[in-house]
Image 1 (cartoon, helix red, strand yellow):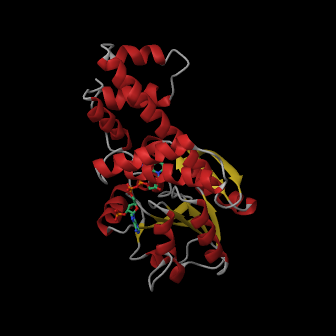
Image 2 (cartoon, rainbow, N blue to C red):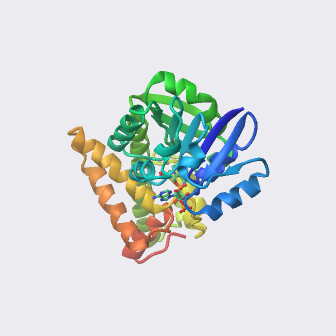
Length: 298
Ligand code: NDP
């Protein structure tokens, strides 16, 4: 049995962890809100251990998987009497599935290396549905030997699993991927608001666009299923997409790449996040466009 600790049972963490709640894995879980960890262990229906603290979860684990909102949250979790560093075992490794920022991931990696613990950044894509099916894309950064070692754990929830480069590379790819999602979402929102006001049915417009050169996953899936239906299910918080676009804009700036579109998209999503609050879903950013335009895309 491979002993794994999973910390962070949020919207995507919980369905990822479910795949590790069975042989050949022996799972310990920790969540900041303890009730969620207890509910998880109950519904997993096996011998999942609910740990009292990050240190308690990590004790005895060969792999510690993290899935928190930000790299800063991960860095903070390392410290304190019951923090991760107090329990983690020399020779073990951390698989950080947080969509993080490359610079903080490098700092965390160095802090862990100093006590003989390995680290890879391993953010995921594919949404909560992909997590449930175990078909996530996992984009990793770090040492190749550590990447190979982590493979059996990542295979439990991932399908396409790629080493993108040194530590922080997985974070950088993930941030750019999500910035593209944000660009598509916003641009399609503006375009469809304009078409709706011009008297064209948005369903008909999407049907045409999805058979043409402007279509994307956003127009194929998100608009029909979530906007036109007015369902706006909450699967991935707008606050987290705002964070991701900000990271992508930062990566562009740090590398001295002129990036007016990424910077503007980051500003737009920061504004939408502040208008709609912490719990809004990312697709609800379209509601801001609708409000400005005075039209509903339906
Ligand atoms: P959620 O907001 O649903 O859950 C966040 C989790 O982190 C909860 O378990 C929460 O605990 C915990 N947490 C929050 N702050 C802290 C903290 N300071 N210290 C310790 N634990 C904390 O987020 P998601 O599960 O959606 O996202 C997690 C990561 O995965 C993010 O980086 C996100 O960008 C990424 N991601 C999410 C996807 C999605 O579809 N949802 C898709 C791909 C990537 P508590 O229960 O106490 O609030």
